[in-house]
Length: 281
Image (tube, rainbow, N blue to C red; front, side, top):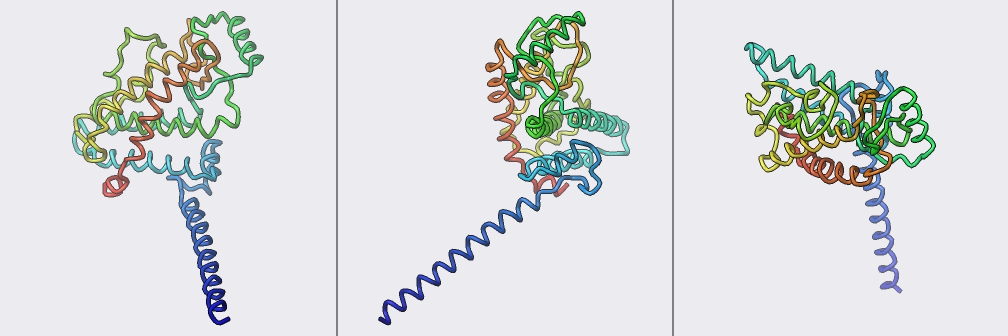
């Protein structure tokens, strides 16, 4: 009886311990989610996108915002204020930041998803035709993003910002453009829009990132330009950079290309950024 009683007490202790462990695990997960904070004060969030970032229960958008901000200001802090070259690059950085916020707040995304709403697609093409716009490549068409696209689009823009900011520490992104290989609107190439001329001269890449990803992010930047250009291939450039969802034709192929050539290598690069290097600068 005593043996059985001892076993019963032992099992009770085991169950209590497991229960405590489970509670602690749940609390730890909840705490890690609560710790996800953006770079701005959510109490002062004013724009639609800022509010969406703060309301994201997964913490993904807050973490991406914080990572982008830490990276941007770590690089900015490394650029001298007292030289002409440094002052010019700092102006370029400000231009980059302004364009990034514009893309983020307007949720400008390329090849994010497939639009299966045939009626909506046809209405858009009809409107375009009425306005004298002929789509030469029917793989993509603009339409207002639906609520379930908001979060993945905002996340995509943050990842794009991190990619192009990082690439500019190696090489001016505008120098990667091969203007003979694809069509785009004049002066509206994404690698031009997010070019930071002169930043590469300071050789900051090695200070913040692993050398093994150098070629990876350069190739991902080239692919981003090519695919974003292809996704808005029209005779008359309207609706430029206001969010594109692919529709038919080679849509699935384009989505796969964006995923394999840009998103997957970029996710791996971002996952391996050492935050301690950013915090130290």
